[in-house]
Image 1 (cartoon, helix red, strand yellow):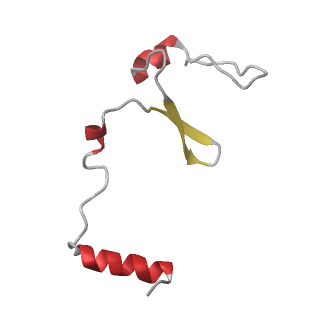
Image 2 (tube, helix red, strand yellow):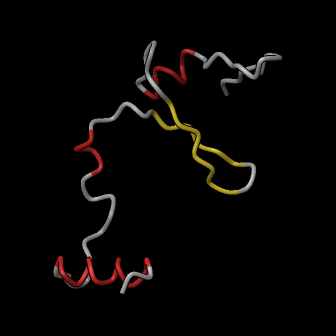
Length: 79
């Protein structure tokens, strides 16, 4: 299991096997996503936007734009 040491500045060097597994290179960004208290997963933040397709399910029924605008106004207290 790859490990890393935290420096006094809070920095770590990500082991090469982990970088390779994430597909990250110099200058790429990674995100630390909290799964539960004290448990994080590391995610490469270099994916193409098209990779997000299907992440959010389609709504059960469609909503008209006017209905959405009305709901936003009501929520903002401007109705």
